[in-house]
Length: 255
Image (cartoon, rainbow, N blue to C red):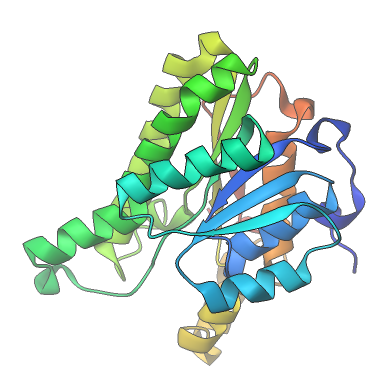
């Protein structure tokens, strides 16, 4: 089946400069390839160069740029966003996608691990938004899409710091939407359900997980990267011009 991310065309995304964090694998790869199919000028940031090569190979002919970047290094993040502007032009769309959902227990958390999880799952969202605000305002507005998760609504106990960060992203979205709205900048959150990325299938999707999905989703079938990308495209486009400070859940009806 051809996904909406591949078939729907948004004129406002053609030639738009888009930045995606964590685009070397999983949902991020799906988002990068979807924007490239729209004719956007896409830059994606990641520290996984091997995965980035796979993403680039999956993109249709378009201007897609990979910038190696450790998103926990805020100075490196800022430099990368400067390079995007220099090479592609004013940034109109930011997709804060990168994150890490490694399983852990509360008992195992150390101060160092706490700081690392916050850096991986929340801090770069703040500083990426900070860095693009003035650029978007000068360009007449833009769209920031933050990737959350339904995990915090499920009371998922498998990764408490990841869950806490994903809950915080919803609050951050609403605060930024209010602060940036007067400059024509929209800020929204996409909450994916359990998406069947290569990583998820390799690490956690076993028979018990399949049964849990069947019991929890209203809809049959499995979420894939393109399902999330389709929502991100719409939020980035002018079709959603009056949508901001909102959560858009794509989970098959789980929560």
